[in-house]
Amino acid sequence: MTWLFAAVATTVTACDDDRAAALFDGGVAPAPPAIPELARASASGAPRVSSSGARSTAASVPVASASCQSARRRLVILGGGDVNLARDLGQEILRDPSQVRPLASLSAWIDSSDLFFVNLESQLSDQGGETQSPYNRLVFTGPPAGAEVLAASRVDLVSLANNHMWDYGKRALFSTFDQLDRVNVQYVGATREPNRAYEPLVIRRGDWSIAVFAVTQIWNQGAFEEHEGRAHVAWARFDRLAKGLVEARRAHDVVLLAYHGGAEYLDLPMAWTKEFVHWVMRTGVDGVLGHHPHVPQGVEWHGQRPVFYSLGNLVFGMHRDHEWTGTGYLARLSFERPPGCETVSCQVFAAEACPYRIQGTTPLPYAGPGRAALDRMFRGMLDRVSKRVGGTELGETGSDGCIPLRPPERAGLRKSRVAPSAITSR
Image 1 (cartoon, rainbow, N blue to C red):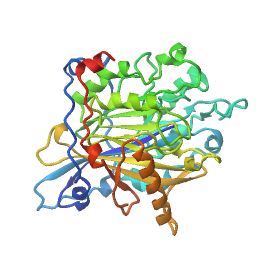
Image 2: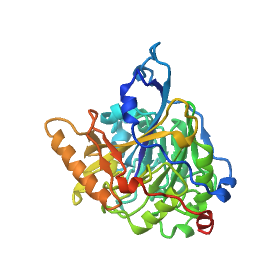
Image 3: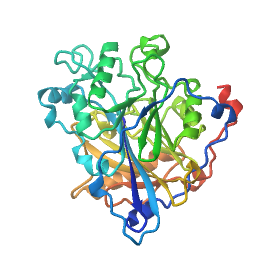
Image 4: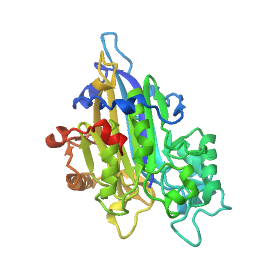
């Protein structure tokens, strides 16, 4: 029930990187919806801002030749599924965190992105060597050194809005904040300060401004509205998010939301998930990345903007009774400002799915003699589950194993806007 997200702001030239020109041949992102009442309203409190620069990728950025006249400014965001640093993996971290690198096999994708964002499924707290409750296997925590594992895996940002953020209580949640702060891994969807979890985290990469929200729609400790955690963790309440989402759309280049909810092991999103997501997309956000079901679900399009209902597991053991818990994929989202473009309305967007299989708790990209068969199996599955939510067009698998995704014609023509009165009365 964790998600991973990565993004990089780089400047490359059209003549130095033909791949950039080929990548951004999709449609232009639609202009933000006109919602005057909400556009004038500001979110409660100022959003938290991370001004840290992108991690160094100097070795991989091509040098502009003297003949190039125009630069393409690009942002690449990589998002993935559930990450659990508890249970047996937590015991490995306790023994020697320097030897635990569950995302090492995905380094080519991670290093070529600009922002890496994951939904952290487990708290990070010291429970005297315990990483899973002896009374309930669904209650667990990662050790404090799990923070070093995330940082060494080049994770930039985690979502903490999920049903396991109170497994060992408030003290363990606050310990999670402390551990992430210690290694400079950002977080969203939960806050130490009461009632600020609905605010976005704003991350800057070069001249790109990215606003990220995170919410959960499932809770393990009974009715959320009656629980102490409601003051520190963001629930999927559109009335608490609407103003902030619209304001973020007006103020930032990219707006994304991480959603944690649905039903475990089902490859179809629940009705309440779809309803919530559709309201969110009507505010003009660039995309939603979902998790919690532990299996991949389909991709839905709102104009040129995607909803990934569930990316499946990332660092999480496979359930022996559910085959697809052993498969997941990263969502790679690419944004570019062509020469002369300085506004959101002219940004060019592309989306890809980068699949992997899970061995133990380690994701492994498809490779070796069975790569073609695994690729066909994944493509067939993603096509099937996406048709249940409107469908997505799959391009040819690239040399790095990622699959371009585009809206089918009927979905690409669909509008996703709503009248101001509909949102303000929600």
